[in-house]
Image (cartoon, rainbow, N blue to C red; front, side):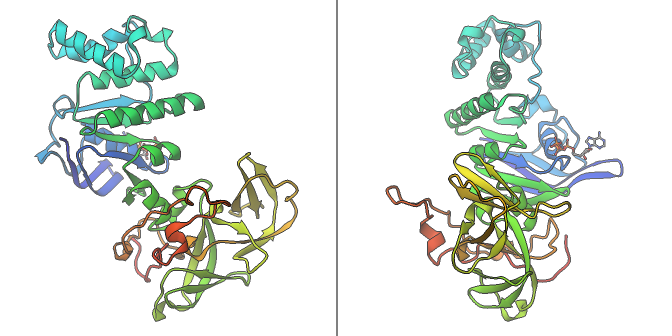
Length: 407
Ligand SMILES: Nc1ncnc2c1ncn2[C@@H]1O[C@H](COP(=O)(O)OP(=O)(O)OP(=O)(O)O)[C@@H](O)[C@H]1O
């Protein structure tokens, strides 16, 4: 058991306020991933939980016990670092055994714990090797093994895979997922820059920005229902396109008059007071498709990138413009320089109050319960998504915010 509760947690270095108003409840056994732009305080928050950084405001509790002034070694936590931090002159077994020996465990206990960690991480053949005789992935497994032998209640990972090449990252990511599955009651908190790691490993993702929490939710919840433009742009790759316009007609389905003359129907309800409100229409590149009918976007393709399973089309790549990007399934040769008309399902469109600041979250709680987007049933052709997106039960895809002060 290890529930973590952060209440109004803050961190400042003198006059520099790095984090403030961090309220977060992490349930025992959850896999939580912190993401956010560089310098937003992900590692600082992790290190405060570990006890490696002083908490300058608020409280951290683990299982109801205040931890602010408890030393790291007594928090029941183990941390795995990006840099492995192995002792180069010690074997794999000795690296893993070190903390146990310091803690005064018997020889038999140390042997049993290191054998077990070696088996769990497939390190048994390497137990007598020095770190220099291991690959990067194997070294990181030793670093994880060092955490496992201590049998902590909470595991903290600070970008553990970022020193590995692409193939090893995938393999080690899967090993971490399997490790978590084998320890369902252990709580894990993981910092990463990698969206795939965040989306695949997390039970819930915490998006940090501007010194606070922008949104917390299940990975697909953040993808499908970002509460603001920042999260919309941060989760998903390439980022969601934001097309400026104004609310033209209100009702259960909103019509948006886009700058440039096009119109879009969005399955998001608006009220009379929202009429003429400046908005950004959010459309994910992967939700766009070519149309002979009425487009929500029309432009000349400046650049294409053929990635095999998909082709990326770029529009408006001139300096200082944020290009609009479409991601079409399959290979589309010869599109560069062509005029293309694109549309998207009204249920796949998002709507944001224009100019909304990063942490402006009011109104998010009034959204109806989240309904996951389902893939097409197996056997159907064409890849058109089925389920809620085609029905009427995902009305509020995005958020229109009333005018108000940004927080
Ligand atoms: N000792 C310090 N004194 C002053 N500012 C600091 C100190 N340590 C960290 N910071 C600042 O705190 C902020 C958060 O740093 P942190 O390393 O937690 O960010 P991060 O989100 O993990 O970044 P990255 O993704 O680049 O690793 C940064 O702006 C950093 O400059």
